[in-house]
Amino acid sequence: MVTEVTRRISILGATGSIGLSTLDVIRRHPDRFSVYALTASTRVEELAMLCREFKPRVAVMADPGAAQTLAGLLSDLPDIQVLSGMEGLCLVASAPEIDTVMAAIVGAAGLLPTLAAVRASKRVLLANKEALVMSGKLFMDAVAEAGAELLPIDSEHNAIFQCMPVDKIRDPAGAGITRILLTASGGPFREHSAEALRSVTPSQACAHPNWSMGQKISVDSATLMNKGLELIEACWLFNTTPERVEVHVHPESIIHSMVEYADGSVLAQLGSPDMRTPIANGLAWPERIDAGVAPVDLFAIGRFHFERPDLVRFPCLRLAAEAFEAGGTAPAVLNAANEVAVAAFLEGNLCFADIPVIIERTLGATAVEPADSFEVIFAKDTEARARAREQIGLLTV
Image 1 (tube, rainbow, N blue to C red):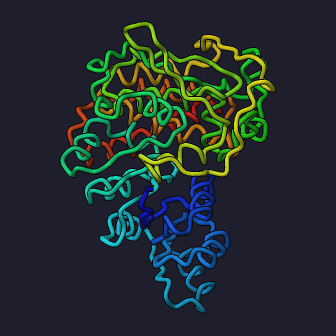
Image 2 (image 1 turned 30 degrees about the horizontal axis):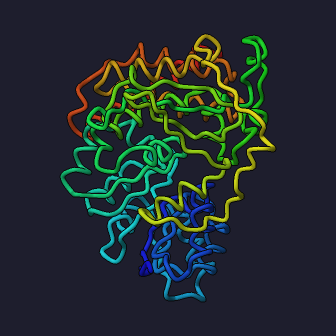
């Protein structure tokens, strides 16, 4: 019989899709998991409701004004401490009272608190791919130095993790692994012409056919930049190169990724397109627990389809591979430019088809430097954002 052990968890990004899915899994297993801290950026009322249900010790709002409002809403719950800003986020990510951190803050904003969790030797459930994309080797070195436990939560990387021998995660060649087959849904515009992509609206881009996700990652999925970021993430997580990672567009989103072995075997992880599966895997690993996910009905699906990504209509995947090959601060520039471009698109200030244009121009206008410190990476992130805004201004004049 398995002895049940309660894990104390801080959830960074509790009001986002990953955070809410994490809380749903925790809700199903109150004897195994308890919530120490919940954080959000500006969604005060949503976080207040979650605090009333899960009774964390600490609640953090990234925005100081929002933290004041939250403290007022929770004034009748004096046992919940309300903190704010990056200092508060890093504090709950590294608190001695916890052993697990769900790193689900979207974008570059998640790097410092995720790094704080790593340096405090926590089990880090990594759903913030941008942190690893930006800082690559520095981040993985920090994991090794601190002895942190890094478990991938992106459905694709979690699938790869499940298909590899545990002791060979950082040595795929030593396990006889020849390729990683990274699947992609293709997004909602897989069959759109280049001309049709110019008229895509934010609401259309956020309506993913298979997954329920936040706005930013939904747009990234639609441009295939999400797959580009995942390509970089896979290279760092599994110590490999883009030449050994092949992207397969799989519209059904049932096979979440595959691993090819030297003997011709291909191991695949299948499941419904529901993030609670990889979240439950990370929370309970190496055990398996109920995640509330419906089983896959293979008879209803009938057949699977695969196709190669179209790098002409969707060049973001190519840009990501090139940034990884360039090395240094190039992936941080890629990420920063993408975040600025996506925000401009969502605000109605940029055409969907021009997102990769801004990214490519920003990469060309920003010098690559050795990524030998986090200070350099953050400085380059700031520079790239300014250059991306300049490029948007030039494009829309």
